[in-house]
Image (cartoon, rainbow, N blue to C red; front, side):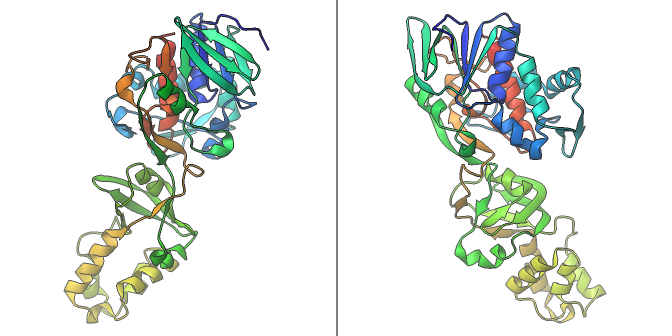
Length: 392
């Protein structure tokens, strides 16, 4: 390892945001030490998208992100766009495709994205991998980072160590500890894009483990139309992961199991098929196990023709807005990202520098900016890393 040496900047964390920041800063002529306690860079990149990396979303915009300041991400996202990242992917000859809802994936391996980001780093970037940070201090305009492999000093420090989601990849709360040390506030971190758990009285639905169905999931005014998946512990699938970022303990989740049916479809069906039962009707529209469970919960046994219109209307309403009250989530271990983090009111929108401490920047998942499922969080990593590099 090198002896203590003056770098222009130290970037803590070799994930997506840190790699991007180090590479761009290096291209701008800065001498950068990129430090990470993992032996290899880009751990979350490698597992994303089933190993093919959902590296951005063509629809990325500030309104697709959750933050105490919903406008904070706008500057970085508008100056470094999804199209900018795609141009870099194309320049490196990486084949990609759009899967759905603007989600862009590698045709091959996520390793191509990590390799690209490493190749974007010039020789002025020193990669310090497999070295844990022991202490970080600041005095006389210089940051001093002590690792178990040496001491590094620079007038600029970028915190890019992410949040505590997916601890098996080495995720920690280091970013929050450092932010507090240097006087930045923290918005309560909690798991996001995470499966929700259901209490014991919903055991009937827990017995549907493995059943998936297109739904509209709602929490308050927010709704997502994607698939929901029943698990042995509760609810998952894209619609649930999306809505989990908006859910708080004590709130209900409402599920529309039949979002494509017209109003009064059940009473109209009564006229057309009076001998049909709700169970049979639902089995034609939903996975059979789910149809049986819903019909049982609705107490529907007799033929539609023998059921009062008012009761059919109630059943239709419940199928459109079936409420669950989750008792929690599957936690940071299963969360794709962390919501909350370093408060944006202490950071510049332009380069994510600390307002009260020149030279300190916080980027990526460590910041209180959390995107929707589908490449949005990677785009924030690229954009925030690029923006911070402009200030180094």
